Amino acid sequence: MNVFDAITQRRSHRGTFQNRAIDATDLEKLIEAARWTPSPFNVQPWELVIVQEAAGKGALAEVTERAIVEQFKDAKFLDDNSRWMRLTASDLQAFGDGVLLTDHVTLPKLLQDAPDGILEGMLKNAKAFTLLGHLGAGKIPAKEIAAQVREAPLLMLVTMNCKRYPPGDGGTRWMWLSMGMLIQNVLLAATALDIGVQFVSAPLERPADREHVRQLFNIPTSHEVVTLLRMGYVEENRGNSVRLQSSAFVHREKRA
Ligand SMILES: Cc1cc2nc3c(=O)[nH]c(=O)nc-3n(C[C@H](O)[C@H](O)[C@H](O)COP(=O)(O)O)c2cc1C
Image (cartoon, rainbow, N blue to C red; front, side, top):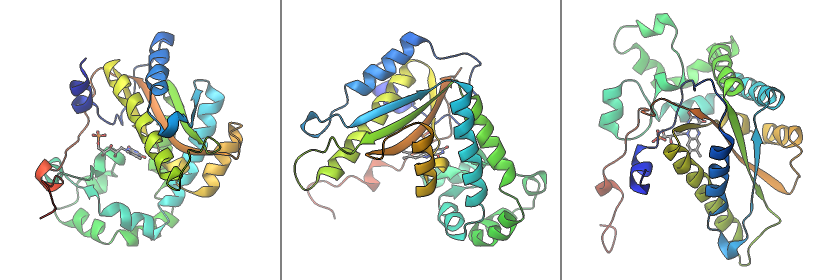
């Protein structure tokens, strides 16, 4: 697969994976893609924790489940989310940004069949969901997503070693940039290998959860846990995804 095809065909994979482990040779390729990431002064600040055994996956699934239950009680989180939630595929196309609500949660039957306008109204008043959250509404999506974490053939914790700091005042910025590049290298290599990848941010949103994950996997305090990726082989990686037109973000010579 050429690079341009990998860039444009990569998708976040939110479904299930084929029930088989990642081949050792493919895992080596993912690691090799990560290894060749550029970094400021070539400091190579990354460390990866590859989790393929049930104990580690189960521990991450538990943190994920608890975090999502709490997110459903958090008015600010719900409100911030609702801004980027699109209710239909045609809305998603029309906006050119955001994510499809149903890609992230399975709606209860009652809401699936709700008359037009009900869901829109609920999203506009997403804060009101906190009440439902306190009544346990987050438990169903939390269990679903936790199960996806538990059942993924491979989980990858991407961490940044803050001791490998480059010179200059901007050091932290450049290190974070570099971590993003590493992740993209892994995502593109995975695409070329028919491996689907999903970011799982929930267990790393709150400082206390990040700290817990750090301890669970013996990650030193000098390291930042940057992201969690779940991955496995997919038949076809065709998630719902859209982009703004380039005219929305490219300026020639100066911003108009
Ligand atoms: C830093 C970061 C965090 C993300 N967190 C999540 C996540 O927790 N769950 C999820 O399903 N997708 C997550 N995504 C994926 C985005 O939703 C996705 O990239 C975006 O909707 C565009 O879709 P695409 O990746 O299929 O092109 C994350 C992406 C990034 C870059």
